[in-house]
Length: 498
Image 1 (cartoon, helix red, strand yellow):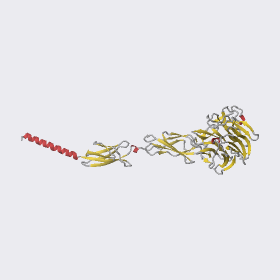
Image 2 (cartoon, helix red, strand yellow):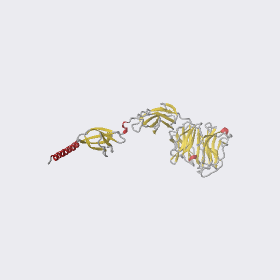
Image 3 (cartoon, one colour):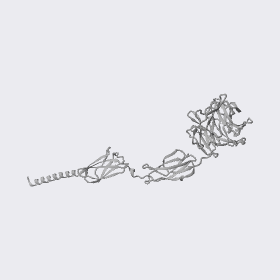
Image 4 (spheres, one colour):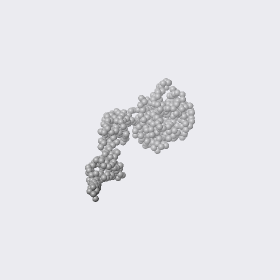
C-alpha cells in the first residue's frame, strides 16, 4: 500500500469519528418543556392556547385538557409565553437542562382582570331633599370610568309610603325622564354605573318630595284599549289618570266627607262597587255577596250617603244599602211590579230617593221618588216610550235632573235619537228643558248638578252611536243663550262634579 493511500484512510477515519461525536453531543444538549394552562380562579383547563418561547424554539397549542409539550428544546434559559384571545398573555421563566423535562403551569386571567371599577356616580338633579317636585321629572347625574369604558346605568326609586320599587335598567345617558310618580310622596333614589366588567358603582341615596295632590273637582271616564278608565281634572283641563287601563272602571262618584271616590268595576263576569283615594290609590272592593246588576251595566248607577258611611245600589228589582267598609248589607226597597231598578239617588238628608226603573230591554221607563219607607211621593215619568235616565237631585230636595229621548225610539241596540236634559221641580210638578240649545242629531245625557246647583255638567254626542263623546256644561240661568254650552273635556263621558 503506497503512502498516499494510507494517508487517505487516516483522514477518512478521523472525519467519521468527528461526525459521530458531534451527533452524540447534540442529542445530549436538549430537553423538554411540559405544562398545563388553566383559567385563574376556577382552574378549568384552557384549550387552544398558543405556547411559544423566547429565545425561539417551537410553537404548540394546548389540547382539550389544557396540556402542552415542547420537545427538542436546546438547554438554555427561556421565557415561555401563553397566548389566547380574551385572556391576558402570561409568561413563565424556565431553565431547560440537558436530557430532562421541566414542567410549568399557567394561570391565565381574562383581559379585563386588571380593569378598574367605574367611579361612584354623583347625583345632580333634583337636588337632595328637594320639595314640590313634579310627578314627571328628569333625573340627572355625573359618572366616569378610569379606563373610559362605556357605562350603562340603573336607576332605582322607592317611596316612604309602600313597598313600590321603580327600577329602570340599561340607561345609556346621564339624563333620564321618569313620568307618573305619585303626588305627595317622599321618594328615595340612587344610580348605579356598570362597565359590564366589574361590580357596579352605586351612588349615595338622595331624596325629593313630589307636589301635593291637586284638588281636582271633576271626574269622568275615557275609553282606552277597550276598557273604561277614570280620570280627574281641574277647571283648566289638567287631567290625571286614576285607574289602570287593565281594569274596566266607570261611573265615578266622589264623596267629600269621606274623601273617597266610588265607582263600578268588573270582576270576572260580575260588577261591584269599589272605592279609592282621590289619587287612585287604595282601591277597595265594597260589595261582595250581591253585585250590581240589571238591564245594562253601563246604564247602572249608585249613590253615596252625605257622610260617606254607606252607599245604595240596585240589583235587578231590589235596592240595597251597604256600609262603605263592605259590612251592613241590607235590602231597603223592592219594586212592586218586578221592574228593574237601573239608577238611584239618595238625598243629602236621606229622607228621599229618586229611582229609575225599566223593563229587561231598558224601556218602559219610570222615574219617581220614594221616602225612606218606600212610599211613592212623585212620579216624573211613567212607563214612557224610549230611553231615559241620568238622575241627580238638588241639595234642597226640590229639583231633579234627568234625560229623556223624546223621539220615543226603541231598538235592540238601545240607540237614542233625541235625548235631552230636563229639570223637574217636585213642588210644582213642572218641567224645564235644559237642552234648549242642543243641535239636531245630537244627544245630551248623564247630567249632574254643579256643587252650587247653578250649572249642569253633561255628556254630548252625535246620535249615530259611534262619534266622539264630550263633556259640556251649561248655566241654568243662561239656557236661552246659544253660546251657553261650553266644552270642558273632549273624548270623555260619565261626568261627576263635586
